[in-house]
Length: 260
Image (cartoon, rainbow, N blue to C red; front, side, top):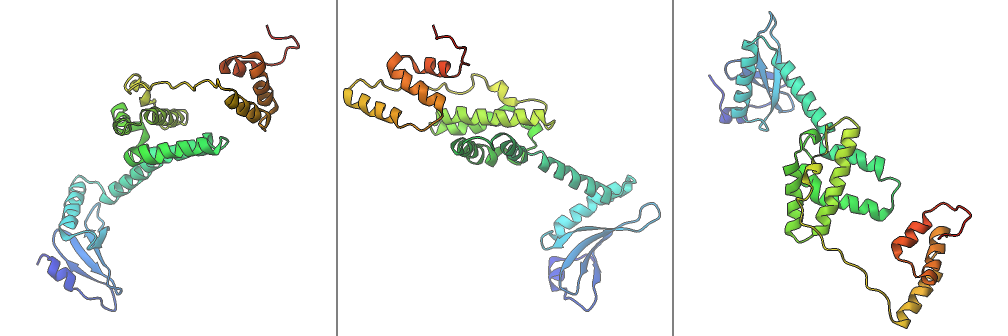
């Protein structure tokens, strides 16, 4: 007689484990501790193995019968359902190892370790706030440009246009790392060129009043950075060069000749 939920719940533990049969090879095994485990017994290649289907009530009676029916189809085709179950488990583990979350963690450890705390914090925020909640579990090789764009549109919808562009750059770095390590074929963010709302550049206002200029000079004099940067900062008010020109000058190798 087939089992029912009422009958299964009423099963009590004994000194030794015992079996209560449902139908078509499905049974529930009751252990001395009171645990109830679903098993599917079948005949294949002259043997009578059994396959675990999970614990009751985590796996309901209805679900156990569905799993049994699926396993019976494999047996009818001459396939051991336990091999199918193992293959699915291995595939799931492989997908988890190559998920966006896993690869982004590898990228962060490999590429961000030497950067400043502020750079690390920005990358972490981009990942944990705007990318991982939506892409974290997805196999990175299967993520498409529209999926990434949906993440970026959510950011744009709250008015954070610069953040959207920054998150796109972080995502691109993760995808390119995946390509380099053989876990993806391409970076889908390359298809999103021009898809985001452009940001407006904001230029810093020039300091024109004497008091403000004095404070700037005092700050330059007290700066404790690298010698090259300190020298460039001290030269800037003497030469009145643009910030980009100072940066370019400070990055040149010394040739022993005065700059023209």
